[in-house]
Length: 210
Image (cartoon, rainbow, N blue to C red; front, side):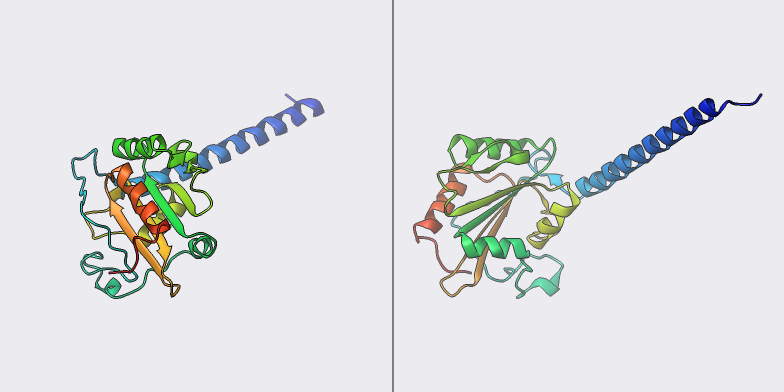
């Protein structure tokens, strides 16, 4: 049986469409796999009953504090390699807040909702930002810790092995001499406390590093 020229053209188009669909499905699955691999590394601490909430006063650091880097002894006494875009934000703002969350993480959603109700943030976790009331002096980035490009930032402020998880909140500012001061807390952080820490920085009440 001989195909007509129109039938051949149709067959070519169908083949191209099928190949394109296969490519898209393959790319999607690859991206999903990469995200799944990343998510495996990030525990939802509150969901697992492992929330290492720490109370008390917040002391900002310049270098990795003693015990923070666990077995990674090379970190002790070292300054974090802060991403360039964070340094740029610190140059124009007084405070940068990083909020790392994960899919299905109840304490992440609870902390975000609490900060939203206090008028500190606006929007949802996935596309949220700092409230207009603070935007002149504060930048906030809400990042899914299961996404590879965000996890690279997460790893800069990663605590000791075994404590890694979400939510994780990082607050950064600068000293009068221009040093980057930072503080990171893993696990649910009371929204009122987060807001008070940032307001304390803006009011000049929280200074220095430890």
